Image (cartoon, rainbow, N blue to C red; front, side, top):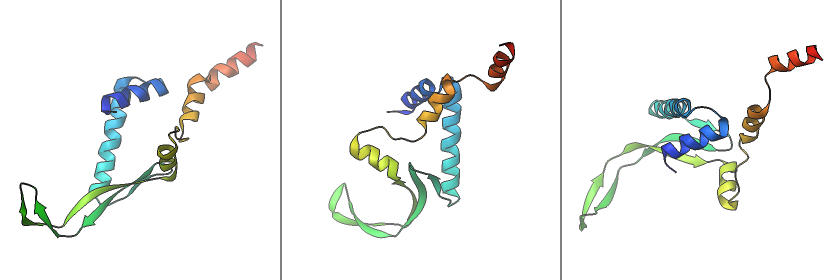
Length: 122
């Protein structure tokens, strides 16, 4: 799944426009990247945790010349650790229980204002 497919899938699931979902996705990814650049962790309970990890300097092999050793400098790299619900979904092949049920309930329900008016008329 690429970004456009994700935007379309979320738009179908929520009933929002693709443009709104695209802006939300861009804002979410921007803020995750900004938090990681500041050294903060970003945790989505059940889904996983994004964090910045420090990699030590090490010696590697030049892929263009396998007999040559190269020094790889220390660096900070993004990392992701899957949460329990995501791990279970991947292992079983079943959809995760995240929060799609609440989206479906909100999509089909009436607003509070309309239900009050209909009760007064009866």
